[in-house]
Each structure stands twice: as C-alpha cells, then as structure tokens.
Length: 187
Image 1 (cartoon, rainbow, N blue to C red):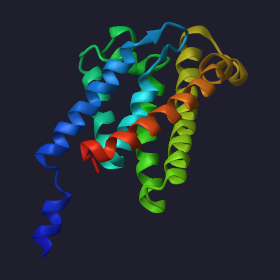
Image 2 (image 1 turned 90 degrees about the horizontal axis):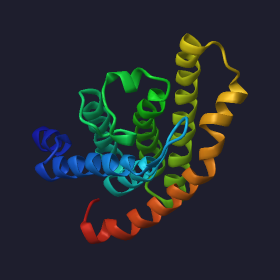
Image 3 (image 1 turned 120 degrees about the vertical axis):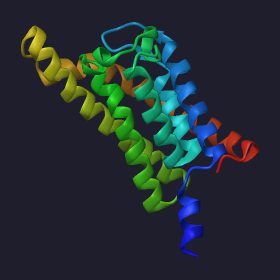
Image 4 (image 1 turned 60 degrees about the vertical axis):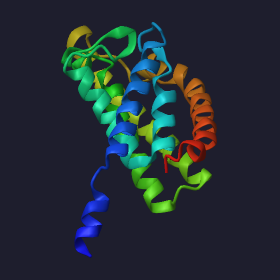
C-alpha cells in the first residue's frame, strides 16, 4: 500500500508534458510585451492560467522550469531576454516572485479546496507576494546602481500601473482555465 502512495506522488509522463507546455506558454506570453521600466507582458496571464489549469503542483513546477530556462540563457523573458543577469537585475525579483505566486496558490488551494473563491484568493494573495518581493528586490538593486529611491516612487513605477491589468488577466485566465480544464482533462 505504501508503494501505491509513493507512485502516485511521482510525476507521470503526462504531468511532465503539461509542465513543459505550461513553461512554454509562460515564455510565449512573456514575449508579448510593451516596454516600460517593468515591461507590460501577458506573462502574469500565463502564470494565472497555468496555475488554475494545471493545478498548484504542476503549475508551480512549470513556473520553476520557466525561470530556470531563462537563468541558463534560453530567451524566455520579456523582450526575448535571458540570463542570470536579468534575474539579478532590478526587475528580476518579479520573475522570481512568480515562483512564490505558485507556492502561495498551491498552499491556499490545498487548504481551502479548488473552489472559485479560493482560487481567486490564492491568485490575489500570490500576486501581492510577487509584488512585495519584486518591489523589495527592485529597491535594493536600484539603490546599488542609482542611489536610494522611495517606496512610493517604486510602487508608482512597478506596481500601481500593473494592478488593474493584472486583475483583468487574472479573471480572463481563470475563466479560460475553468472552461478548458474539463475538455483537456487536466485535473
């Protein structure tokens, strides 16, 4: 009986395929961007979609694979960039923050179930954690290269312009994932 539980926890081939497809979707959506201090991309849409459609476990793994691909030089980040330099740069904290979004989503949905309100709560909480981590990272890196900057200024550059678009992307991703999951038998 113990072996059956252990086998169930392992990733099946189909899980690996979904994880790979999730990482590819995030990469493709990150290439759709409008350049600004922190580029406007469809990346967060893909993160939300992957988490909802694939679930917290596979979705978080897809995010980690995406970040690792970018770290080793595959041009998967916004504007076809890549490398550890991007992750260590001023906006790298937001990319790393995507991993925290996945972890927060996985934890909340695990505790509360995959009800619509729980998924929305998990995604909003994950987004807030990503914003917080990315903003702190931005402030540290920016201060090292350009001097100190106020939290209000960084929020004005990196968070406030993105809140409404990210919430719209959250709603669209959740609606699409809920519509496609039964058809694709992702759950």
